[in-house]
Image (cartoon, rainbow, N blue to C red; front, side):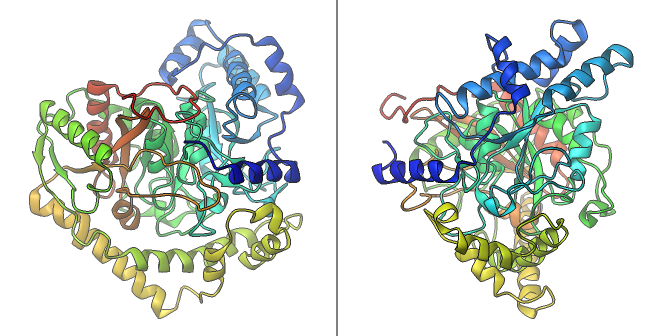
Length: 540
């Protein structure tokens, strides 16, 4: 199925009207003239580090190849629109990493490794941080986000910012995932007429298409897990407080987190080691129960599922898609063959009972947290409050609201302070129902090591007229609880990826990585995208 004619016409009008889409810096354009072939498909961190150490490749050569591929496929060819802006300093950073390697050795575990980060993550360089919105176009952060400091210290080469659902998909209940006023519409590289899902859709499409080695996304509820599953990636949604949020455009501090997105569990684990650190500017990372300095790579165990008690969360998370159920059931069977003790069913109590209280919390915190972030921007910014953003959108309706409105922003603006009794009651309800009486309750009762459920359905067709056709996922319990989850490729339906999620208790990332790695290595479901125009219905 193709996108509706109306949607295509509107998209073309928008692209012409904005004239703000992806611009290639001159230094990067010239790089493409010297790079003729791309041989880094599906390449891992481990391989690229070995290549640099052996002298087979330099960091500059690696970066040039990825930048050339972005030029060929992002706004040309299949036109994924995964990238919103390239880093004009990328090749200079790569050159610096090469010089450093020659003089003092490798800086860290990401030395010379190209990475893309979502456009809601601050960088104090020549790139804007806009959350996809024209209201923040040209806004340059005064300082790097804490996790960007961590990436630079580890030696990463930031190639650019990835496109995203504008304002992390918290603008309208009728939105189309992956669309932003500044970046246009992200396409799924497995079928170009299908959604890349969630607000981290640009990061997902970029990493799936080998535009970089690894990427960073953010999640409030589903925005790492859903796009990762939809593009056959490994996505880790960490426990809230494991990874700093300072310097990231927020939705809600109760649920927001950044996290790794990669093509392998090992790459995601390496990136998580870099991102996870205490930040004095983010109180959640200073929780005394928080583990410090965990070597997540040590959890990579081929026999990691042997003896693990894995509960299958069926109620609410199966039954919305026949093909998803088939793939998930096959994954559960394979886990059993790998030595897992399957407890089926192991339903999560109260699932679905806190949907309204979750929304209440997000609305309250969005107003408070976004006002705080925008209020700290410099005088050059066009918006210093949620009210300013709403006014900008109204004044620029043809550019910012050609497909859907800003109903959620309007609702949030009506909310009072975080001292309101309604907000405080919603927070208590969410924590109680999702943690003590939810995930913890079923895991305690059945003595489980992890819960498993399908991450979501195969990607739906893009519809700019009616918005997303979302049918189901398993992201909400862990999102509301602030607990970790990991999605791993589990199979395909009509060529569209389907993921399986491992969900656990607070701070259980190492355990989940162990189980995810064992499953990944035994099944190796991931395959690179074909950039098909549509899904292969009736083929597989």
